Image 1 (spheres, rainbow, N blue to C red):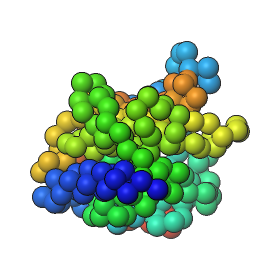
Image 2: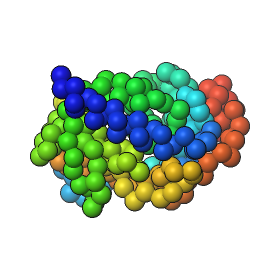
Image 3: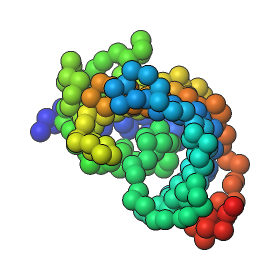
Image 4: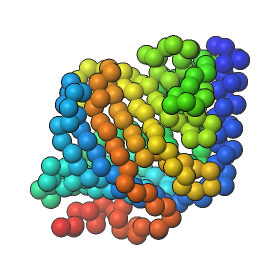
Length: 233
């Protein structure tokens, strides 16, 4: 393990966390358009609209309308419930929350590095790179390495790229590359990306364009209640 690399990684993350000390975000509501691409990544296959409501700590609701079918996915802590388009509610496995990558929740540099380590990202390997004309710190990969699990950290925007190995539904393990761009200021030094793209083994699978983001509107707790979800029509 490279002590110098680990020190560089920790310093970069600590400096970013320090930037967010003035951000006071209790909840976040995101309205976005989602485009799913054909598995070959060459053309759009379907398009839908999402509303994501996050109430810290640990509550998230996704209301999705895709191809005329409405689905609601509710996550509270480590449990997830899904209300299907036919009205039935089932408990489902909890998926990794990509929004968490860009949220300024109260997490220390140690906690962030621990989360990335769980994705196979080595904090003892660091390098410098430029992405869309901006200098970033790459944690987990050396210069020119585009296949090792890594986080690309912009000192102002936070995570702008994440490379990790994941098992996609119905397929073998793939190299998933998430990119976050078109950042706009939201609150006290916190920038939110209005464009997100997901690639698997170099093929574009998902494009998200954010239409609006609001903070601290205090959505009702009932919005995150599984029993209320079962009664919804």
